[in-house]
Length: 305
Length: 305
Image (cartoon, rainbow over all chains, first blue to last red; front, side, top):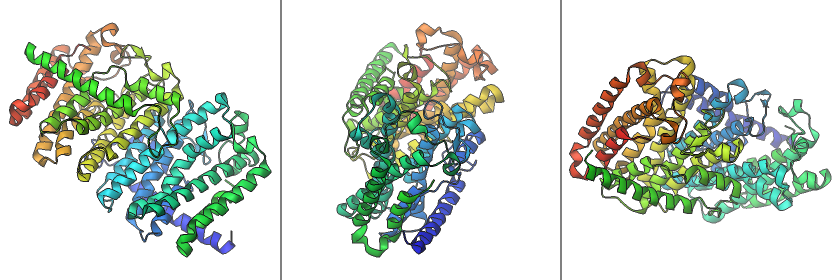
């Protein structure tokens, strides 16, 4: 990716990340909202630990930029972006649990169950998952009722038993079931693909865009989801823990099937390049407006951590 | 409660329970819905184990009967009832986990993490929590968009960090923090009260009833929530595990503060009777239409398991 575009991408990503973190810091304070009884301080601290941890905020970026394609900016897409980030963060908190991936570190910091305790980590995840739907049904989200319900329906289906949660279940079984290439593709499409796909669709849902445009953005999301996973598998193979900020080499050690493992590093790099090309082609009709989404595809393929 | 009313209550409860279980059995099958990639069979089996276990379905009963007050019956309130039951069942699955209450039995059957494994139990809970919002945003719910969004907002707030999840967090801390009477009341209002309150409000939200009617039903829900907890604490004190179908005497053993423990059994029985009277008074304006909700208050106070 061109150096100047890379710089612009990085600035834009950082800007959206700051905005979403500011919003979430405000919403996840100790003070109860209307209709809440009280907010337990220790639970809230654990939630903030799991959310306000300097993540790249890739999903919020995709929501903001897919919204911008349809002329939407500001508080409303930001709230949608923050809701999606709550789902992503809850999934990380639960995936890190001893019963799941048993990780001590996340982005160089102790995971929530290490910093607090296991029960609090489970509840922090449950609370964040629930809060995502609270945010999307909030009347401060200035969208038509149809758009709000479309976002809730889309997010629930992407995140649930037939999407992200189901993908994590398949991933945990993978060491035992040894899924082939199709099986790995399915579990990745669910575990990481579904949320990225939803992030890219979100702008179209918010603006009530034509079905064809929504589908095109969803396909873009699918392509970058596959690229994301491929890059992740390559990172796990080649990077060291200090760079990535979490344990690496775990997949190979755990005997987890990855596409890189089923083929070769060279094959994977070729596939990754092909996915980026495919993602770029899908954005063609949006012309120059899609500059930042195009840059996101490159960022995902090239990332070093 | 009059024997004939008790019989009618039991028949009505069983009827709603069967209807909600039939609906959930259909929705929680292995076949993916539109927009889902696939449904992992083992995860789905764990979910069904946690849901289709012969629960009393008290919350669905309250949803159906509060809807009936406003002339609503059939598939639509049933779907709302089922969504709420998914939230209740997820909370039981997570509460039973080793890191939380560490229970092996639930309604006389192995808990989900005992029948499957801990990771699957965590994911089954996450999936059910997410699915509740899927159901409420589903277009098969024949309600106005405003009513659907009102249900989603109300359920999210009742179930989240300032409601049920926060209550469970406070309950886990209680052995260490030794909350006084106010603290116990707060945690109970969150842990069990919030969902029962929402169940009773649901009919008013669905039908777009006046705010005063919604508030009255919410207060009824609060009263029976308090009664429910009082009856639970009394049961824990006096019943044996075979009758209740789960471990008893645990609260006292774990040094958990309960109102019964802070006062006496006699005091608690007096309070319970007062709460039932209060609940009945709140239903007065609904006249004979509220017969089944009145019976529910008695059932909650008198239950033996």
